[in-house]
Image 1: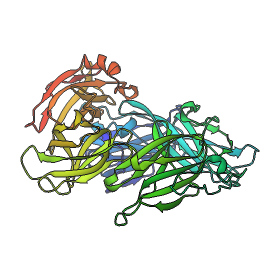
Image 2: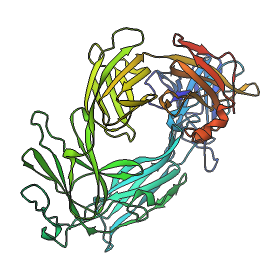
Image 3: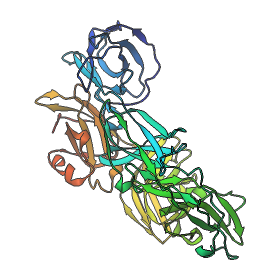
Image 4: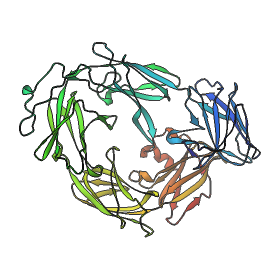
Length: 544
Protein backbone atom coordinates (compact mmCIF):
# COMPACT_ATOMS: atom_id res chain seq x y z
CA UNK A 1 0.00 0.00 0.00
CA UNK A 2 1.07 3.59 -0.60
CA UNK A 3 -0.48 6.69 0.91
CA UNK A 4 -1.04 9.82 -1.17
CA UNK A 5 1.49 12.58 -0.76
CA UNK A 6 4.16 14.49 -2.58
CA UNK A 7 6.63 12.32 -4.45
CA UNK A 8 10.09 12.86 -3.02
CA UNK A 9 12.54 14.58 -5.30
CA UNK A 10 15.01 11.97 -6.51
CA UNK A 11 17.06 11.17 -9.60
CA UNK A 12 14.48 11.41 -12.39
CA UNK A 13 15.08 9.82 -15.77
CA UNK A 14 12.38 11.41 -17.91
CA UNK A 15 11.36 10.50 -21.43
CA UNK A 16 8.70 12.37 -23.37
CA UNK A 17 7.70 9.21 -25.20
CA UNK A 18 5.72 6.09 -24.50
CA UNK A 19 8.46 4.23 -22.66
CA UNK A 20 11.18 4.96 -20.14
CA UNK A 21 14.29 2.86 -19.57
CA UNK A 22 15.60 2.55 -16.02
CA UNK A 23 18.45 0.12 -16.87
CA UNK A 24 18.54 -1.57 -13.48
CA UNK A 25 16.71 -4.86 -14.01
CA UNK A 26 14.65 -6.99 -16.37
CA UNK A 27 11.06 -6.23 -15.38
CA UNK A 28 8.48 -3.88 -16.90
CA UNK A 29 5.51 -1.82 -15.70
CA UNK A 30 3.19 -0.75 -18.52
CA UNK A 31 -0.40 0.20 -19.16
CA UNK A 32 -2.83 2.64 -20.77
CA UNK A 33 -4.23 5.87 -19.31
CA UNK A 34 -7.91 6.30 -20.17
CA UNK A 35 -10.82 8.59 -19.37
CA UNK A 36 -13.27 7.03 -16.92
CA UNK A 37 -16.26 8.57 -18.68
CA UNK A 38 -15.50 7.70 -22.31
CA UNK A 39 -12.91 4.95 -22.07
CA UNK A 40 -10.86 6.84 -24.65
CA UNK A 41 -7.07 6.72 -24.30
CA UNK A 42 -5.48 9.96 -23.08
CA UNK A 43 -2.47 11.44 -24.78
CA UNK A 44 -0.14 13.93 -23.06
CA UNK A 45 -0.77 12.32 -19.66
CA UNK A 46 2.25 12.49 -17.37
CA UNK A 47 2.98 9.19 -15.67
CA UNK A 48 5.46 9.01 -12.78
CA UNK A 49 7.13 5.95 -11.31
CA UNK A 50 8.61 6.02 -7.79
CA UNK A 51 9.92 3.59 -5.25
CA UNK A 52 7.15 2.66 -2.80
CA UNK A 53 7.59 3.16 0.92
CA UNK A 54 7.76 5.82 3.59
CA UNK A 55 10.46 7.72 1.69
CA UNK A 56 9.49 7.71 -1.97
CA UNK A 57 12.09 8.50 -4.61
CA UNK A 58 11.15 9.24 -8.20
CA UNK A 59 12.59 6.64 -10.57
CA UNK A 60 11.30 7.74 -13.96
CA UNK A 61 8.57 9.70 -15.69
CA UNK A 62 7.05 9.60 -19.15
CA UNK A 63 4.29 11.15 -21.25
CA UNK A 64 1.70 9.14 -23.15
CA UNK A 65 1.19 9.36 -26.89
CA UNK A 66 -2.07 9.09 -28.84
CA UNK A 67 -2.57 5.48 -27.70
CA UNK A 68 -2.46 6.54 -24.02
CA UNK A 69 0.22 3.92 -23.42
CA UNK A 70 3.06 4.19 -20.93
CA UNK A 71 5.93 1.80 -20.29
CA UNK A 72 8.83 1.57 -17.84
CA UNK A 73 11.45 -1.05 -18.72
CA UNK A 74 14.57 -2.30 -17.00
CA UNK A 75 13.08 -2.39 -13.51
CA UNK A 76 14.45 -4.35 -10.59
CA UNK A 77 12.15 -6.63 -8.62
CA UNK A 78 10.32 -4.58 -5.98
CA UNK A 79 7.35 -2.32 -5.24
CA UNK A 80 6.66 0.87 -7.15
CA UNK A 81 4.23 3.77 -6.81
CA UNK A 82 2.47 4.81 -9.99
CA UNK A 83 0.84 8.23 -10.51
CA UNK A 84 -0.75 9.93 -13.51
CA UNK A 85 -1.98 13.44 -14.30
CA UNK A 86 -3.33 15.33 -17.28
CA UNK A 87 -4.80 18.78 -17.71
CA UNK A 88 -8.57 18.64 -17.26
CA UNK A 89 -8.43 15.47 -15.17
CA UNK A 90 -8.04 14.66 -11.47
CA UNK A 91 -4.44 13.58 -10.70
CA UNK A 92 -4.42 10.15 -9.07
CA UNK A 93 -2.38 7.24 -7.81
CA UNK A 94 -3.06 3.79 -9.21
CA UNK A 95 -6.40 2.49 -7.85
CA UNK A 96 -6.56 5.42 -5.42
CA UNK A 97 -9.31 5.42 -2.79
CA UNK A 98 -10.51 7.80 -0.06
CA UNK A 99 -8.05 8.49 2.68
CA UNK A 100 -5.13 8.51 0.24
CA UNK A 101 -4.86 4.72 -0.09
CA UNK A 102 -3.61 3.28 -3.38
CA UNK A 103 -2.09 0.14 -4.85
CA UNK A 104 1.66 -0.32 -5.30
CA UNK A 105 2.78 -2.30 -8.37
CA UNK A 106 4.94 -5.32 -7.55
CA UNK A 107 7.51 -6.49 -10.11
CA UNK A 108 9.16 -9.90 -10.08
CA UNK A 109 8.73 -13.44 -11.28
CA UNK A 110 5.08 -14.40 -11.85
CA UNK A 111 3.87 -10.86 -11.03
CA UNK A 112 1.36 -9.06 -13.26
CA UNK A 113 2.77 -5.59 -13.91
CA UNK A 114 2.03 -5.02 -17.61
CA UNK A 115 -1.12 -3.91 -19.40
CA UNK A 116 -2.40 -2.02 -16.36
CA UNK A 117 -5.60 0.02 -16.83
CA UNK A 118 -5.06 3.51 -15.34
CA UNK A 119 -8.33 5.47 -15.32
CA UNK A 120 -8.59 9.23 -14.68
CA UNK A 121 -11.73 11.24 -13.91
CA UNK A 122 -12.36 14.45 -15.91
CA UNK A 123 -12.65 17.49 -13.66
CA UNK A 124 -16.01 19.20 -13.22
CA UNK A 125 -16.86 22.89 -12.88
CA UNK A 126 -19.60 24.57 -10.83
CA UNK A 127 -20.44 28.26 -11.04
CA UNK A 128 -23.27 30.72 -10.88
CA UNK A 129 -24.41 34.13 -9.67
CA UNK A 130 -25.40 35.48 -6.24
CA UNK A 131 -28.18 38.11 -6.32
CA UNK A 132 -30.44 39.82 -3.80
CA UNK A 133 -34.24 40.29 -3.63
CA UNK A 134 -34.20 42.99 -6.26
CA UNK A 135 -32.11 40.95 -8.67
CA UNK A 136 -28.95 43.01 -8.09
CA UNK A 137 -25.63 41.22 -7.96
CA UNK A 138 -24.11 40.59 -4.52
CA UNK A 139 -20.37 41.08 -4.66
CA UNK A 140 -18.00 39.94 -1.93
CA UNK A 141 -20.30 37.11 -0.80
CA UNK A 142 -18.50 34.18 0.81
CA UNK A 143 -19.48 31.12 -1.19
CA UNK A 144 -18.66 27.78 0.45
CA UNK A 145 -18.75 24.42 -1.30
CA UNK A 146 -19.38 21.31 0.81
CA UNK A 147 -18.80 17.74 -0.31
CA UNK A 148 -20.32 14.50 0.91
CA UNK A 149 -17.52 12.08 1.63
CA UNK A 150 -16.90 8.71 3.18
CA UNK A 151 -14.02 8.87 5.62
CA UNK A 152 -13.10 6.19 8.15
CA UNK A 153 -16.27 4.28 7.34
CA UNK A 154 -18.62 7.20 7.96
CA UNK A 155 -20.57 9.35 5.53
CA UNK A 156 -20.21 13.04 6.38
CA UNK A 157 -20.44 16.45 4.73
CA UNK A 158 -17.27 18.54 4.91
CA UNK A 159 -16.08 21.86 3.57
CA UNK A 160 -14.44 21.40 0.16
CA UNK A 161 -13.64 24.91 -1.13
CA UNK A 162 -14.34 28.63 -0.75
CA UNK A 163 -14.74 31.49 -3.18
CA UNK A 164 -15.71 35.16 -2.99
CA UNK A 165 -18.23 36.44 -5.51
CA UNK A 166 -17.05 39.11 -7.95
CA UNK A 167 -18.69 42.53 -8.37
CA UNK A 168 -21.12 40.98 -10.85
CA UNK A 169 -22.07 38.33 -8.27
CA UNK A 170 -20.36 35.47 -10.09
CA UNK A 171 -18.39 32.65 -8.47
CA UNK A 172 -16.75 29.46 -9.77
CA UNK A 173 -15.28 26.21 -8.48
CA UNK A 174 -13.19 24.13 -10.85
CA UNK A 175 -11.19 20.89 -10.69
CA UNK A 176 -14.07 19.19 -8.87
CA UNK A 177 -14.20 15.44 -8.37
CA UNK A 178 -17.42 13.55 -9.07
CA UNK A 179 -19.68 13.38 -6.04
CA UNK A 180 -22.48 14.99 -4.07
CA UNK A 181 -22.04 18.66 -3.15
CA UNK A 182 -23.86 21.40 -1.23
CA UNK A 183 -23.56 25.16 -1.61
CA UNK A 184 -23.74 27.80 1.14
CA UNK A 185 -23.50 31.62 0.95
CA UNK A 186 -23.02 34.28 3.60
CA UNK A 187 -22.86 38.05 2.96
CA UNK A 188 -23.73 41.45 4.37
CA UNK A 189 -26.06 43.83 2.49
CA UNK A 190 -23.91 46.68 1.18
CA UNK A 191 -26.58 49.22 2.13
CA UNK A 192 -27.15 47.97 5.70
CA UNK A 193 -26.94 50.46 8.57
CA UNK A 194 -26.62 49.02 12.09
CA UNK A 195 -27.25 51.41 15.02
CA UNK A 196 -25.29 50.66 18.20
CA UNK A 197 -27.70 49.05 20.72
CA UNK A 198 -28.41 50.87 24.00
CA UNK A 199 -27.76 49.19 27.35
CA UNK A 200 -28.91 49.99 30.87
CA UNK A 201 -26.39 50.93 33.62
CA UNK A 202 -26.22 47.27 34.75
CA UNK A 203 -25.14 46.19 31.28
CA UNK A 204 -28.43 44.65 30.19
CA UNK A 205 -30.03 45.60 26.91
CA UNK A 206 -32.85 48.09 27.19
CA UNK A 207 -36.25 46.86 25.91
CA UNK A 208 -36.45 46.42 22.14
CA UNK A 209 -39.05 49.19 21.77
CA UNK A 210 -36.51 51.63 23.26
CA UNK A 211 -33.67 50.61 20.94
CA UNK A 212 -32.65 52.88 18.06
CA UNK A 213 -33.96 51.40 14.83
CA UNK A 214 -33.35 51.91 11.15
CA UNK A 215 -35.22 50.43 8.20
CA UNK A 216 -31.75 49.61 6.86
CA UNK A 217 -30.81 47.55 9.93
CA UNK A 218 -31.02 44.29 7.96
CA UNK A 219 -28.94 41.15 7.51
CA UNK A 220 -28.77 38.14 5.19
CA UNK A 221 -29.18 34.75 6.86
CA UNK A 222 -26.70 32.13 5.70
CA UNK A 223 -28.37 30.63 2.64
CA UNK A 224 -27.97 27.19 1.10
CA UNK A 225 -28.85 26.04 -2.39
CA UNK A 226 -31.68 26.11 -3.23
CA UNK A 227 -32.71 29.06 -1.00
CA UNK A 228 -32.75 27.22 2.35
CA UNK A 229 -31.64 28.96 5.55
CA UNK A 230 -30.51 25.82 7.37
CA UNK A 231 -28.14 23.14 6.13
CA UNK A 232 -30.58 20.35 6.94
CA UNK A 233 -32.88 21.64 4.18
CA UNK A 234 -30.11 22.17 1.61
CA UNK A 235 -30.56 20.53 -1.78
CA UNK A 236 -27.81 18.07 -2.75
CA UNK A 237 -26.08 18.79 -6.06
CA UNK A 238 -24.92 15.71 -7.93
CA UNK A 239 -21.75 16.42 -9.91
CA UNK A 240 -20.60 13.93 -12.52
CA UNK A 241 -17.18 13.75 -14.11
CA UNK A 242 -16.80 16.54 -16.68
CA UNK A 243 -20.00 18.40 -15.68
CA UNK A 244 -20.36 22.19 -16.00
CA UNK A 245 -23.09 23.07 -13.49
CA UNK A 246 -24.74 26.48 -13.02
CA UNK A 247 -26.16 27.08 -9.54
CA UNK A 248 -27.63 30.53 -8.79
CA UNK A 249 -28.71 31.71 -5.34
CA UNK A 250 -30.85 34.63 -4.18
CA UNK A 251 -30.31 36.20 -0.75
CA UNK A 252 -33.25 37.65 1.14
CA UNK A 253 -32.58 40.45 3.67
CA UNK A 254 -34.35 40.23 7.03
CA UNK A 255 -34.70 42.74 9.90
CA UNK A 256 -31.58 42.26 12.01
CA UNK A 257 -31.37 41.43 15.72
CA UNK A 258 -28.56 42.42 18.10
CA UNK A 259 -26.60 40.06 20.31
CA UNK A 260 -24.60 41.11 23.35
CA UNK A 261 -22.31 38.75 25.25
CA UNK A 262 -21.34 39.13 28.90
CA UNK A 263 -17.94 37.58 29.72
CA UNK A 264 -15.58 37.83 32.73
CA UNK A 265 -13.32 40.87 32.66
CA UNK A 266 -10.14 39.83 30.80
CA UNK A 267 -6.91 39.32 32.69
CA UNK A 268 -4.53 41.93 31.20
CA UNK A 269 -1.60 39.52 31.58
CA UNK A 270 -3.30 36.89 29.41
CA UNK A 271 -4.89 39.02 26.70
CA UNK A 272 -8.42 38.71 25.42
CA UNK A 273 -10.01 36.30 22.98
CA UNK A 274 -13.08 37.77 21.25
CA UNK A 275 -16.13 35.50 21.62
CA UNK A 276 -17.14 33.80 18.42
CA UNK A 277 -20.58 33.48 16.88
CA UNK A 278 -21.15 30.03 15.37
CA UNK A 279 -23.81 28.35 13.31
CA UNK A 280 -24.38 24.63 12.89
CA UNK A 281 -23.60 23.69 9.29
CA UNK A 282 -23.89 20.00 8.42
CA UNK A 283 -23.13 19.00 12.01
CA UNK A 284 -20.09 21.24 12.44
CA UNK A 285 -19.92 24.68 14.05
CA UNK A 286 -18.96 27.31 11.48
CA UNK A 287 -17.57 30.67 12.59
CA UNK A 288 -19.50 33.78 11.51
CA UNK A 289 -17.45 37.01 11.52
CA UNK A 290 -19.07 39.94 13.40
CA UNK A 291 -20.39 42.89 11.42
CA UNK A 292 -19.59 45.77 13.82
CA UNK A 293 -18.04 44.49 17.04
CA UNK A 294 -17.75 46.76 20.10
CA UNK A 295 -16.62 46.08 23.68
CA UNK A 296 -16.93 47.87 27.01
CA UNK A 297 -15.89 46.95 30.55
CA UNK A 298 -18.50 47.17 33.30
CA UNK A 299 -17.17 46.27 36.76
CA UNK A 300 -15.77 42.75 36.80
CA UNK A 301 -17.36 41.91 33.46
CA UNK A 302 -17.01 42.86 29.82
CA UNK A 303 -19.90 43.39 27.42
CA UNK A 304 -19.14 42.33 23.83
CA UNK A 305 -21.57 43.46 21.15
CA UNK A 306 -21.28 41.21 18.08
CA UNK A 307 -23.42 43.55 16.01
CA UNK A 308 -26.42 42.78 13.85
CA UNK A 309 -27.27 39.30 12.63
CA UNK A 310 -30.21 37.61 10.95
CA UNK A 311 -32.67 35.84 13.28
CA UNK A 312 -31.83 32.19 13.89
CA UNK A 313 -30.19 29.66 16.21
CA UNK A 314 -26.56 30.39 17.09
CA UNK A 315 -23.80 29.09 19.29
CA UNK A 316 -21.43 31.39 21.16
CA UNK A 317 -17.93 30.36 22.19
CA UNK A 318 -15.18 32.09 24.16
CA UNK A 319 -11.68 30.60 24.14
CA UNK A 320 -9.67 30.78 27.35
CA UNK A 321 -6.31 29.52 28.65
CA UNK A 322 -5.06 26.18 27.23
CA UNK A 323 -7.77 26.32 24.58
CA UNK A 324 -10.54 25.77 27.13
CA UNK A 325 -13.87 27.31 26.19
CA UNK A 326 -17.05 28.70 27.65
CA UNK A 327 -19.98 28.23 25.34
CA UNK A 328 -23.68 28.82 25.11
CA UNK A 329 -26.45 28.89 22.54
CA UNK A 330 -29.42 31.10 21.81
CA UNK A 331 -32.46 31.26 19.55
CA UNK A 332 -32.37 34.85 18.36
CA UNK A 333 -35.79 36.22 17.54
CA UNK A 334 -35.17 39.60 19.20
CA UNK A 335 -32.28 41.50 20.79
CA UNK A 336 -30.69 39.38 23.52
CA UNK A 337 -27.78 39.22 25.96
CA UNK A 338 -25.92 35.90 26.39
CA UNK A 339 -24.16 35.42 29.72
CA UNK A 340 -21.00 33.38 29.18
CA UNK A 341 -19.73 34.37 32.61
CA UNK A 342 -21.98 31.68 34.05
CA UNK A 343 -22.42 29.42 31.03
CA UNK A 344 -21.62 25.72 31.34
CA UNK A 345 -19.74 23.66 33.88
CA UNK A 346 -15.96 23.71 33.88
CA UNK A 347 -13.72 21.46 35.98
CA UNK A 348 -10.04 20.69 36.35
CA UNK A 349 -8.57 17.53 34.81
CA UNK A 350 -5.29 16.44 36.38
CA UNK A 351 -3.35 13.22 36.64
CA UNK A 352 -0.27 11.35 35.56
CA UNK A 353 1.16 9.73 32.42
CA UNK A 354 3.73 6.95 32.45
CA UNK A 355 5.38 4.65 29.92
CA UNK A 356 4.69 0.92 30.12
CA UNK A 357 8.45 0.31 29.98
CA UNK A 358 9.06 2.47 33.05
CA UNK A 359 11.35 4.79 31.08
CA UNK A 360 11.14 8.57 31.31
CA UNK A 361 8.62 10.32 29.09
CA UNK A 362 10.06 11.73 25.85
CA UNK A 363 10.52 15.52 25.58
CA UNK A 364 7.51 17.74 24.87
CA UNK A 365 4.91 15.20 25.99
CA UNK A 366 1.45 16.75 25.65
CA UNK A 367 -1.98 15.57 26.77
CA UNK A 368 -4.82 16.50 24.38
CA UNK A 369 -8.58 16.31 24.90
CA UNK A 370 -10.45 16.46 21.59
CA UNK A 371 -14.24 17.02 21.78
CA UNK A 372 -16.55 15.05 19.54
CA UNK A 373 -17.22 17.92 17.13
CA UNK A 374 -13.52 18.50 16.54
CA UNK A 375 -13.63 22.13 17.72
CA UNK A 376 -11.84 23.51 20.77
CA UNK A 377 -9.18 20.84 21.43
CA UNK A 378 -7.67 21.31 24.91
CA UNK A 379 -4.04 20.55 25.66
CA UNK A 380 -1.41 20.84 28.37
CA UNK A 381 2.23 19.83 28.77
CA UNK A 382 3.20 16.98 31.09
CA UNK A 383 6.03 17.58 33.53
CA UNK A 384 9.14 15.39 33.69
CA UNK A 385 7.47 13.03 36.19
CA UNK A 386 4.39 12.70 33.96
CA UNK A 387 2.01 14.83 36.00
CA UNK A 388 -0.30 17.29 34.25
CA UNK A 389 -2.98 19.80 35.15
CA UNK A 390 -5.59 21.04 32.69
CA UNK A 391 -7.92 23.73 34.02
CA UNK A 392 -11.40 24.96 33.05
CA UNK A 393 -12.46 21.92 31.04
CA UNK A 394 -16.14 22.15 29.97
CA UNK A 395 -18.46 19.20 30.54
CA UNK A 396 -18.32 17.09 27.37
CA UNK A 397 -17.06 13.84 25.88
CA UNK A 398 -13.41 13.87 24.77
CA UNK A 399 -10.99 11.60 22.96
CA UNK A 400 -7.69 11.43 24.85
CA UNK A 401 -4.44 11.62 22.87
CA UNK A 402 -0.82 11.94 23.96
CA UNK A 403 1.85 13.36 21.67
CA UNK A 404 5.57 13.94 22.13
CA UNK A 405 8.61 15.02 20.18
CA UNK A 406 8.88 11.39 19.04
CA UNK A 407 5.33 11.37 17.66
CA UNK A 408 2.02 9.96 18.86
CA UNK A 409 2.20 7.79 21.98
CA UNK A 410 -0.21 4.87 22.19
CA UNK A 411 -2.51 4.59 25.21
CA UNK A 412 -2.30 1.04 26.57
CA UNK A 413 -4.57 1.57 29.59
CA UNK A 414 -6.54 4.47 31.04
CA UNK A 415 -8.49 4.97 34.26
CA UNK A 416 -10.17 7.98 35.85
CA UNK A 417 -12.08 9.12 38.90
CA UNK A 418 -14.70 11.82 38.45
CA UNK A 419 -15.25 10.87 34.80
CA UNK A 420 -16.56 7.89 32.86
CA UNK A 421 -13.96 6.10 30.71
CA UNK A 422 -14.96 4.47 27.42
CA UNK A 423 -11.94 3.03 25.68
CA UNK A 424 -9.76 6.04 24.88
CA UNK A 425 -12.53 8.53 25.60
CA UNK A 426 -13.64 10.22 28.80
CA UNK A 427 -16.94 11.86 29.67
CA UNK A 428 -16.36 14.92 31.84
CA UNK A 429 -19.24 16.04 34.03
CA UNK A 430 -19.43 18.32 37.05
CA UNK A 431 -16.72 16.71 39.21
CA UNK A 432 -12.95 17.32 39.04
CA UNK A 433 -11.23 14.51 37.14
CA UNK A 434 -8.15 12.53 38.15
CA UNK A 435 -6.83 10.68 35.09
CA UNK A 436 -4.06 8.08 34.81
CA UNK A 437 -2.79 6.65 31.51
CA UNK A 438 -0.15 4.06 30.69
CA UNK A 439 1.58 4.68 27.36
CA UNK A 440 3.69 2.77 24.88
CA UNK A 441 5.92 3.77 21.99
CA UNK A 442 4.09 1.35 20.00
CA UNK A 443 3.41 -1.39 18.48
CA UNK A 444 3.33 -4.34 16.19
CA UNK A 445 3.44 -4.44 12.40
CA UNK A 446 1.25 -7.12 10.81
CA UNK A 447 2.14 -8.31 7.29
CA UNK A 448 0.15 -10.67 5.12
CA UNK A 449 -1.44 -11.40 1.74
CA UNK A 450 -5.03 -11.00 0.55
CA UNK A 451 -5.96 -13.70 -1.91
CA UNK A 452 -8.89 -15.11 -3.81
CA UNK A 453 -8.80 -18.55 -5.40
CA UNK A 454 -5.13 -18.79 -4.51
CA UNK A 455 -4.14 -15.56 -6.28
CA UNK A 456 -3.09 -12.24 -4.79
CA UNK A 457 -5.66 -9.48 -5.24
CA UNK A 458 -4.75 -5.78 -5.26
CA UNK A 459 -6.89 -2.79 -4.35
CA UNK A 460 -8.61 -4.60 -1.46
CA UNK A 461 -9.44 -2.82 1.81
CA UNK A 462 -7.74 -4.53 4.75
CA UNK A 463 -9.39 -3.77 8.09
CA UNK A 464 -8.19 -4.70 11.58
CA UNK A 465 -10.99 -4.25 14.13
CA UNK A 466 -10.47 -4.43 17.93
CA UNK A 467 -12.89 -5.89 20.41
CA UNK A 468 -15.44 -3.29 21.50
CA UNK A 469 -14.71 -1.23 18.39
CA UNK A 470 -17.32 1.38 19.28
CA UNK A 471 -15.27 2.57 22.26
CA UNK A 472 -11.87 1.86 20.69
CA UNK A 473 -12.24 3.26 17.20
CA UNK A 474 -8.75 4.78 17.38
CA UNK A 475 -7.29 1.23 17.49
CA UNK A 476 -8.72 0.34 14.07
CA UNK A 477 -6.04 -0.04 11.39
CA UNK A 478 -6.47 -0.05 7.60
CA UNK A 479 -4.42 -0.68 4.49
CA UNK A 480 -4.91 -1.31 0.79
CA UNK A 481 -3.43 -4.45 -0.73
CA UNK A 482 -0.76 -4.06 -3.40
CA UNK A 483 -0.88 -5.74 -6.80
CA UNK A 484 0.40 -9.07 -5.39
CA UNK A 485 -2.11 -8.93 -2.52
CA UNK A 486 0.48 -7.94 0.09
CA UNK A 487 -0.39 -5.52 2.90
CA UNK A 488 1.11 -4.16 6.12
CA UNK A 489 -0.76 -2.82 9.14
CA UNK A 490 1.38 -0.60 11.37
CA UNK A 491 1.20 0.65 14.95
CA UNK A 492 -1.03 -2.16 16.19
CA UNK A 493 -1.36 -2.27 19.97
CA UNK A 494 -1.64 -5.38 22.10
CA UNK A 495 -5.13 -6.84 22.27
CA UNK A 496 -7.69 -9.03 20.53
CA UNK A 497 -8.70 -8.21 16.97
CA UNK A 498 -10.54 -9.48 13.90
CA UNK A 499 -8.87 -9.09 10.49
CA UNK A 500 -10.90 -8.86 7.28
CA UNK A 501 -10.24 -8.22 3.59
CA UNK A 502 -13.15 -6.62 1.69
CA UNK A 503 -12.91 -6.18 -2.07
CA UNK A 504 -15.53 -3.41 -2.28
CA UNK A 505 -15.01 -2.09 1.22
CA UNK A 506 -14.17 1.47 0.16
CA UNK A 507 -17.85 2.32 -0.34
CA UNK A 508 -19.04 0.65 2.87
CA UNK A 509 -20.13 2.55 5.98
CA UNK A 510 -18.08 0.04 7.93
CA UNK A 511 -18.13 2.17 11.10
CA UNK A 512 -21.71 0.94 11.58
CA UNK A 513 -21.74 -2.34 13.57
CA UNK A 514 -24.63 -3.77 11.54
CA UNK A 515 -22.76 -3.19 8.27
CA UNK A 516 -19.48 -4.66 9.50
CA UNK A 517 -20.89 -7.64 11.43
CA UNK A 518 -21.28 -10.05 8.44
CA UNK A 519 -17.64 -9.48 7.44
CA UNK A 520 -16.32 -9.89 10.99
CA UNK A 521 -18.14 -13.22 11.26
CA UNK A 522 -15.91 -14.55 8.45
CA UNK A 523 -12.75 -12.76 9.56
CA UNK A 524 -9.56 -14.06 11.16
CA UNK A 525 -9.20 -13.72 14.94
CA UNK A 526 -5.83 -12.40 16.14
CA UNK A 527 -4.30 -11.94 19.58
CA UNK A 528 -1.45 -9.42 19.63
CA UNK A 529 0.95 -9.75 22.55
CA UNK A 530 2.60 -6.66 23.98
CA UNK A 531 6.14 -7.97 23.54
CA UNK A 532 5.78 -8.63 19.82
CA UNK A 533 7.35 -6.27 17.28
CA UNK A 534 6.23 -7.86 14.01
CA UNK A 535 3.81 -10.54 12.92
CA UNK A 536 3.77 -12.32 9.57
CA UNK A 537 0.44 -14.02 9.06
CA UNK A 538 0.98 -17.76 8.52
CA UNK A 539 -1.86 -18.07 6.00
CA UNK A 540 -3.33 -15.79 3.30
CA UNK A 541 -6.37 -13.71 4.17
CA UNK A 542 -9.37 -14.69 2.06
CA UNK A 543 -10.98 -11.72 0.28
CA UNK A 544 -14.71 -11.25 0.94
